[in-house]
Picture 1: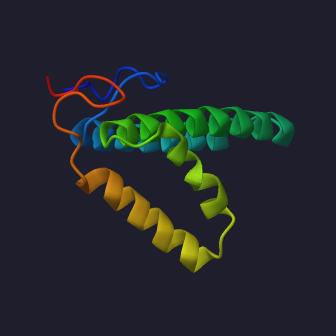
Picture 2 (picture 1 turned 30 degrees about the vertical axis):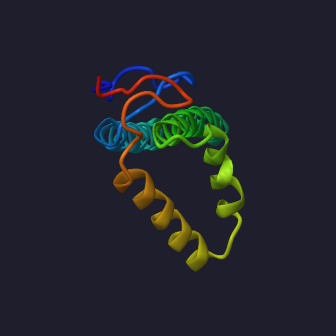
Length: 124
């Protein structure tokens, strides 16, 4: 099993369901804690905005790479992780529905057994 704490920025591995779920939850918790920390800092509004932009970009990159790793385990191209971009501009109800459906697919669909186009099985 791939550890949920390693290879967050790698675009060359496959990530199985359990590791993906744990890594996603850890990322969400980290982003939430960083956001709270930034809000509690006694700094100017410009500094807070800069911190928000930096942590948002880092969170976006981590989220993309984790999703791409999971898609590769299903034997799909990691480029499909970019579907989050047009979904984010959709109507709120449509966005919520599509995001939930996409997350469920990533959480529920088992990875390819054995080696696939994108590498060896993360389960060994």
